[in-house]
Length: 475
Image (tube, rainbow, N blue to C red):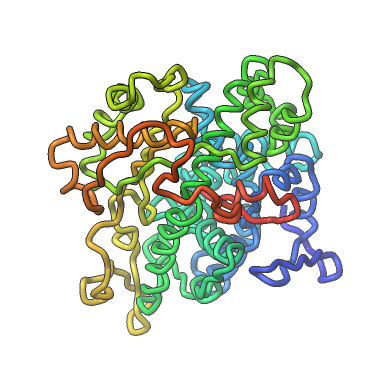
């Protein structure tokens, strides 16, 4: 698989984050396929460039690891192809839509990536040795057990690091999405790659770069909080999912995820395809997408931050049914509440964290010093900033109403249910709510700004309104 080539055989691509990227003929043969080019319509990028940089750095600086050119190629291909399996709207697909419509499939984008990679090789006459293909598939999944034990364990820390989550995928999307929202990161990816060193079969970092790694973890949390899970983005996500659920009986969308030739055309273009359709069976889906286009979004009602250990209690008590029951109790008896049903209320529980749920990812990273470059250890308390948080995860409980006229009632119903939970106020980071409003809100303003700009949405949803933009969607 290793190619001998001169610089004239390389393609050079200008990238806003990594400047010029050199692409070998082998990588070009993978990029110039339908399976890979499909990602243009899902706002995803592979991280082959960073994956290769990391592998080549380790190969050059530590020749005793015996990392070969073949190893470097396999790691780069895995980096390029690890997101081939993302469905429309990226994580909306496998995080919300597939669990709602086809829970038994337990579908994850990693299995889609492996399916599409096999299809890419078969349909484009790209011949890889069987052992190389097996190795690449294992790298995509981040599972050494899926390939020969002869493969180097340290290479699994590069593309999909299951030990601590600090891999080139995270390095890239944090830098890229920060840039796309107008707040470029100060992180030096080149420095982190040069800092990487293999000790005891795992990638370790210079202790001087501890703060850089912490910045990555914190920036991940911040992006999820401010961008990916912004209330406007979440409202649009739920509208997209509802539209696809209505379209599913007619379009049989979920049947296509296991068929490469069908999956090839499952992209964000589902939205305009449905919008331009004329079948009466898709009228409900068209109406929802029309609401998205005209900014008649599901309305944000209320939000609380909950301690992770108490989230189960809130999941049990805060349900659409309970909220609607309380809302109806509060309502004026003369109001028409026909459309106020549990299906018209959304209760979203989103856990935001530094990358490893309630754990500090840096507790799973080992470091070395210049004095002892061949010895690694976990960072000690004195190595960290005194501002390191004691808690690394929290749960955001967010309520939406699908009908704007019921925002006040839904808010009142939710807050009534909230009061019934023991110590519900002491377990949150916000003050107890004010007296709930009564009645519909046709002529009142709720406790939020209804006219957020579209660029406040998550990047993958921003593109639905701005087809010329190229922001990236993230896990």
